[in-house]
Image (cartoon, rainbow, N blue to C red):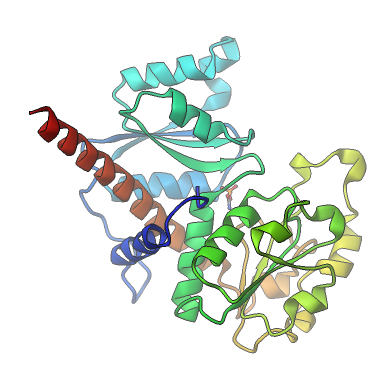
Length: 312
Ligand code: CP
């Protein structure tokens, strides 16, 4: 998670990711850092970007990668999660990439799995999506050069968003001047101010002079259906349009972690417009996940080397 992560480690992740990117064409290099390692993608919730970029990242690091089809796994025959993991551990797994609908799932697995396996959180419930926030920080740093003096507006369903939580923590850690969250009160968590964010319930207040605008979708799968906001009403009050973007800094970039819901939180003209860096976020996600996986594994190798030396 970003929580508890020292700033210098987050910066090292961004720097390591940059070393994998060819600046000219944003191509990602192939390197042998995880040759001989086995990575399992364990996605208990749907994913397009995170699962595939973790897979690509593992392959670019020369690891063997397996995508578990959870719906067709023996968990459907009553096998427990931990028993499934023990069996994967017996296949010499080195890393589990975990997405789960329950907040705390990756942490739970990390505490119960064998210490030989590294666990990476690929999104847990409403709690955190650390590598998404890291690739978002990479993208902001790429386009803005740094975080000092930046005003960042995060707009949409903050209440149910693990991405927003991780982004707020990362932006605060890296020294952004203002982190604004823009949403109706009903879509804001009670503890939002304690996270260091400035609350704006009117979109025009949130967008004023913003350098970075991040749109988030309504997380309907985490909402009580009786309390679902009307999509057309949400777009009328909070939807990002070209006209509304005129209030931002003239060089403002527009971001979105995806999946986007066109005409709900963002108009197509903005999602596909010249300020949008949405698809570049996806590309940078490969390099950032390569950085996280390689640093995680090299840290484990160092720990192992140290304990062997001490043992001798
Ligand atoms: N941003 C993100 O987590 O997208 P996916 O759900 O498609 O992985």
